[in-house]
Image 1 (cartoon, rainbow, N blue to C red):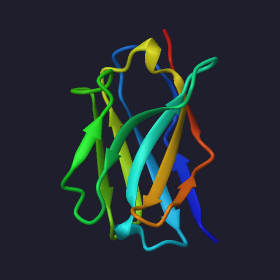
Image 2: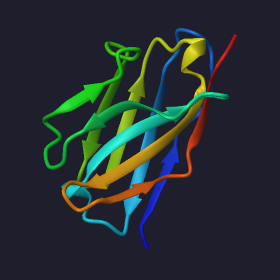
Image 3: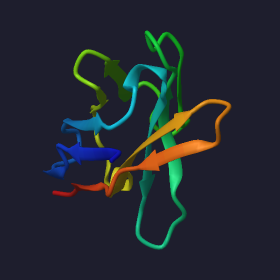
Length: 119
């Protein structure tokens, strides 16, 4: 059974930091492209960051988070991270972990973790 379990969300003041984690099980983690998406109230789900399979040498980010967020992976721990710095109220959303196996049309989603940025 495949599971992606997010953790690390919570309430933080503007300018603060959080680190999200996503622990994967039931898959060969290293061959999956991993990503973080978010969905704010009343808005569509959007890609935040994505990291390539293997060593994770390639990453890409939404323009709105470039320079503030960093995605990384630890294949030994089957975990992908999202370090979020200088958080803004507009970063408030449910953040979802996503994994896809390139070329196979296979994807999995976590249940999400809520990040609230507010003073």
